[in-house]
Image (tube, rainbow over all chains, first blue to last red; front, top):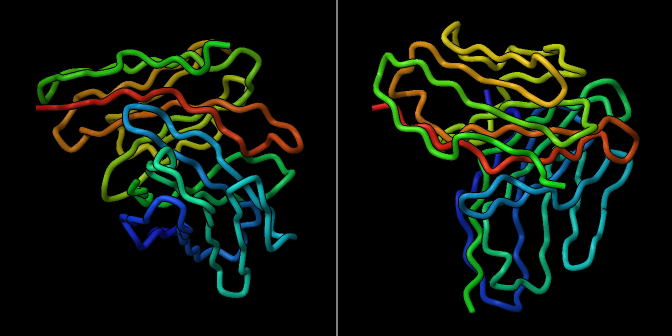
Length: 115
Length: 116
């Protein structure tokens, strides 16, 4: 069973507009969430994270929102740039600050930013 | 820092052959992870080590898969015998446990495995 779901395999947006990538999870024990970005022929790289004690975390053009009651998080990119075109993975974990570093990843969303 | 190093970058083999994938984690990192990426399942965690000791291998699909970490700077993932359904991109990642860094894993470039 897929505990972390990204239901949109792909998304296309115009340069300068907002990109919104969505992620749903089923395990209420998850308390830390991350987004990773992946370019072709490269490994994923960490982008931004949020703990369950917050509902928003912002880093430059990237903002992650967490809705615990809906078990939903989203990544907003404003403004979108062509260099943002990549696959974005959502990941979740249990035990923030605890002894485990195990991440559960979603299937990814391919973002294409059109010039 | 060179980052996480994986070899080979590409591997093409025939069904039934043994395949060995290699990983060198970032120096000083105490966690090492092996993942498999497929279109259908995304990034799946296969196994992870802490201080060279396997902690969780529940993601290893079958007995055909095995992983070792003989020292802090080297790990292998072996598939014997390989099957066409093993074709995927395999990633190695490492991390350093500590508040604020506990969940930031650094990935290697991956090994694209094709089993004919």
